[in-house]
Image (cartoon, rainbow, N blue to C red; front, side, top):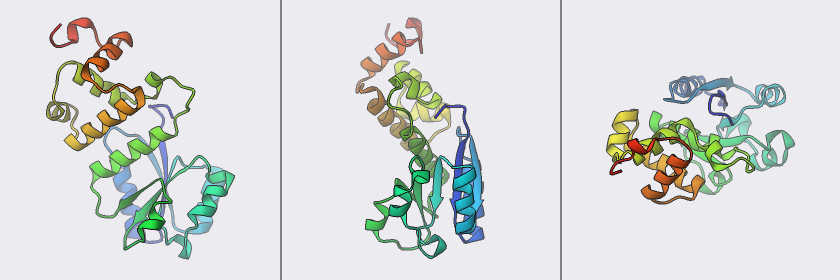
Length: 202
């Protein structure tokens, strides 16, 4: 998806406290533009899927007595939707493995932001070149790496946790298949992310 496009996130949960709380948290995610839709019933979920399919669906596995993730996966409507299990009580881990990811009601904002950012990149088209699949935040991190900044310095500059910076760096390495600062430097210069004068040690 495009970096400036709002991420449509549906929250399917029967508890008004959990549903509304998660919706408010999603609206506060740093550096991510989200549009949340609260769904309190299976009918509301079906209407949402028909009229305005979300990019991400956060759903309680017990939603509507039982949410059949296998059936949802086989339905053409759910084909391009990433599904995140919303865990508010004990859930069998074998069931959770069928979801794209899961979040707990105990997760902090950084953990939720990290998972949303990861999941929105999964849906990027394979035919796009690697530079087009990088988020704006990932480009900023590449620039910081090329300038010789440490993970701690990057985290402080971009107001992120060190864990989030490390995750972004891992995603950058996976997308670009570049596993060294020298390789990132060459990539950044070739793709005009930095000028030669910006590179530490040159």
